[in-house]
Length: 388
Image 1 (cartoon, rainbow, N blue to C red):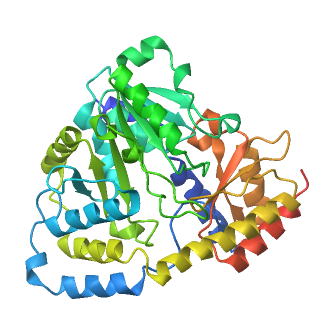
Image 2 (image 1 turned 120 degrees about the horizontal axis):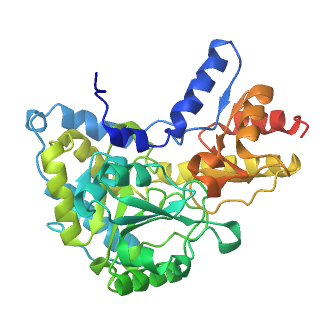
């Protein structure tokens, strides 16, 4: 009897966080006190002013119907205002903004909108697994761009082979970066835009962590002159506003690409619940409220505790300048899976192996700073007791 499973599913790599969650649950079921730095899901609540706007909007029957289209005009105009104030970039709310059901949805659907079978997609490694899985679903072929510490975790574009450049249709960038926490300077985006123009490649810059920064605000690729000719950028409210479960994000940039993405979405979903869109308007308009800035300071304090603790334990680690991740180098001679397993088995602490983000991530582990300062201090203290 034939299998009901499509062959493309066999091409997908195992989704990293499913296996980590399984092992964590085994430890919890055994009654162990597990401290979890695994999935990047903020543990702090959504700010009350956003919840209040949602509560008001959900009582309005006008928001109970299908929310068809690319998002409420008021939300798209709010995105335009945010981009003008934050980046000095002008956008057309009618053609250069598309509201998404979380950025993961848009990232997964983009290759279906722009990639033909056999086209090459350039994906960073280590990198977010959905860049690869979306390519597979669209029938494309992935070519990985290795990221390395010696290059500041930026891809070396000139290392991409000439034949790959010729066939490439789409290039993924992700800064501030997950998992490495690297920040790309505007000069790199200028280089990337020039490269994309020369080789007729679309850039998709994934930027869900742009508002979680500890010093200088990270740039947008759309600040580069002419970037909208060859680029779009994904932004999410999930991490900035502790709204991961709300599933609200947006894409901005090249209007032809966004129209293609919108066409895919119109055939596969019916838009984002309008009450959540109203909450998103409140969130973006409240980006400079004290409680949002205080959340960044919470991450800064957790970062400082984690970095100091790992350094004391002999793990080389740089203090990230953005995101809520710490990218820690494993002890000498220890691979990332071994380090992850031993940290869980001997310290009851969950971290993510760098190899789970691709072979270029080997030798590192990632921590998400979604655990309280007190528990972070306890976790690094436990890890320090492991003899390597």
